[in-house]
Picture 1 (cartoon, rainbow, N blue to C red):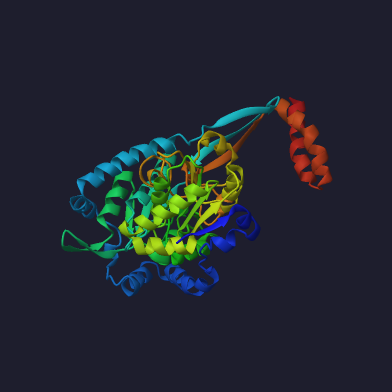
Picture 2: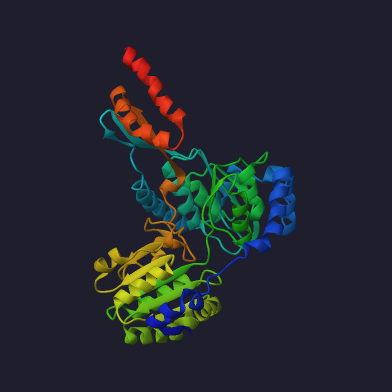
Length: 441
């Protein structure tokens, strides 16, 4: 089922051989996606309605694009009360976590008479893309909308593709009610029935119905990701999300049953999901492999799980935990679980991970749904240079300088030789001209 290799073999042959992370071959998509983007840029809502009818097989009028208040009201009738209650409790935890990330404005004196600091200001508008179809993830609404609201974004919109659903044995056409409820609970201002690359183009350039935004975030398929890359010169975009990943560093004290189920959980999302166990215990590796084989058929998504474990599942047997930490830093997975007797000692040695889950009572699904941490995380090894979505992603940090006469005199002594060396004498003169007024006073 899973490949088992030694840590030495992994380090020698490299991550690419054993964990073939998905590549969407953006170049091959550019021609198709650029057509969608240009059509929306030129024809706006007309193009959106045509694409929705052609590809989503749903015919809408221009007045149908924006979700109406009565549609949201009706959505609550179609969503189980237990789910609504769970969403509200999750929102509370996510808000609390993301509020703690806000930095305060600050100021210091760098030189006598020179005050320098930073102020934070929220982005004015943000557009969130929420996938539709078979994948209905109200949790992703929470994880993307709440940080933006906490940051103080004044206009927050969602685009999500309309689809056909069977709810309570009745046909339902539109955005899934659970998505509408989640968006409303998060305080999203407007929701639009628009999907795929044309939704990204609409938020990037604006149409008569859909407003242009400052930044676009949210997961999507290869067409959504390609469209983001095409509009990034016009609007801020987040890092495209790839397949879900988990690595687990475990020693002989870890519970193999917990490990097996945590691996199941992260490879049931979609094709190309990655699951890696890194352990210095051969006994733990063998027991985990046995449990994976015995319990696989009891999983609802067993075929997808089996495919992912065979394609991108791996057990790495290391000589010691230190070697395992090195391998985990090389892989740089989206999720990293620490299941060792000395997690507090291991944590400072972790350099690359989207999010870290410590101990046997901190499984990744808690972060996916309700603990407060964000589940929009870097994938495909990009945790080496990217962070998970957070409140500061929706804020600008602006430098502020306030210099007195005395401070100006002090800094002129430093500035003049540098400006003259670089040949930018107007920079020097812009400072010196002020001395005439200072000296005359």
